[in-house]
Amino acid sequence: MIIKSAEFVKSAAKPSQYPPAILPEIAFAGRSNAGKSSLINTLVNRRRLVKTSDTPGRTQLINFFNINHNFTFVDIPGYGYAKVPSSIKKRWGPMIETYIATRGTLHGVVLIIDIRRTPAADELNLLDWFNHYRIPFILVLTKADKLSKSKQKHHRDLIAKALSVNQEDLIMFSAKSRQGKEDVLRAIEALLNPAST
Ligand SMILES: Nc1nc2c(ncn2[C@@H]2O[C@H](COP(=O)(O)OP(=O)(O)OP(=O)(O)O)[C@@H](O)[C@H]2O)c(=O)[nH]1
Ligand SMILES: [Mg+2]
Image (tube, rainbow, N blue to C red; front, side, top):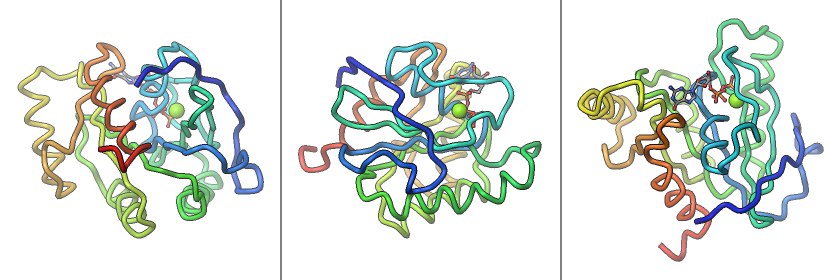
């Protein structure tokens, strides 16, 4: 898949603010600071289409991006950052669950996990939602550049066990080295066109 164009469409908190449900959608979810926005920028070859930040919890609304005038990437705010005000934390769960539950054009979710962290209850809860609402998902371990190749494999093994998935289901990725970019694009293409794979 070649990404030729990427444009910000809008930010939304609730369904009445979502753009019209026309194009197929791929959403990017994960813990705050995991590297969701960086992953999207790498995939679309743009340094700053999506704002990234050293301050976790900066992305607090659902952001929609038109890709190739053909489908939509959706940057979902991260969860699990302690310093986010509790009023925002309380909004997060319903905002995300409503999006996942009601967005008929949602073809799949890319769940992004920092390769150095062991997934916790938050990740398992998200996977429960995906299964409950029958949303296909792919799993990406990002910041792989922070570990040696042998440590990458070791951590992939630990994360696979924690999530009860096969190691092959975990794509290793780095926004810095661009390792895994083509693998992620291929997996997204399969989510967009399930019949052709
Ligand atoms: N070394 C390295 N740093 C990364 C990588 N991906 C993201 N980062 C850094 O991690 C920090 C957070 O990245 P973001 O892409 O903003 O993370 P996010 O998941 O969108 O965070 P929120 O929007 O706050 O939920 C930034 O300082 C990035 O530069 C990566 O693959 N390698
Ligand atoms: Mg972000």
